Length: 325
Image (cartoon, rainbow, N blue to C red; front, side, top):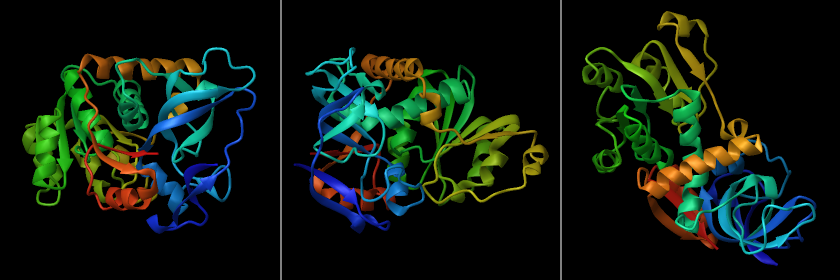
């Protein structure tokens, strides 16, 4: 039996239950990991609340991102061995001292990436990798707006976009977060609670507006985000921290400049093993070189998962948060 955090019914952070569970040996194509650090993400809240249905039914162990050491290998696994340091973004089951994962969803960690870094960056970092390189290719001269610039994805995205040569505009909710965003690559920061972010974007860009808006906030920033885009610009909605965007008349995209709008998710971009490895490799290289730093600003014990979710949902966190079994 090992410690885990399970959800028996949908609801607020109080439904996260710390208890002992039995973890079976790995089956065909699976590995068992002794986990050293578990990532905390907004998607964990969506599963907890029932906004996303659990693919394994109820109860389920929360979380889908962790890093640790391989302690057992199932039949058919050839490229991962006992003792390997690995990380993954995979199926539910992340908030646990040990867990089983499909071997083809795990990636080996370079020696210069810690377990804590990996748990804080696999989902967020690989999300930034595909957003900036595949969903819309950011490069020298790109003007991008990144909402929640001091959040987990935001801090990585600001650094990475800056590294690629973009002009980075970030929105944040406080002066403290504005300072953090600036230190992590944002050239311009807008306090969205105090300022009209559309007007500020027009001012900052001299009326040119942005090539792309990366929005992990959702309801609170839509449809105003569309007014920050130049004609043929890209609106990229990758999260819903403030609630889901309601259905809208698609003709609004034509009226505002023949805009593109997309709702990508990491699972589709790394569905193929080769894409997963390439995405992770690019992330490891950027972090290893120092071009992108992974700020793990909140660390909680596994038993304190309820508090971790409260802090995340209250917008009281910056950078990455992790649980330590």
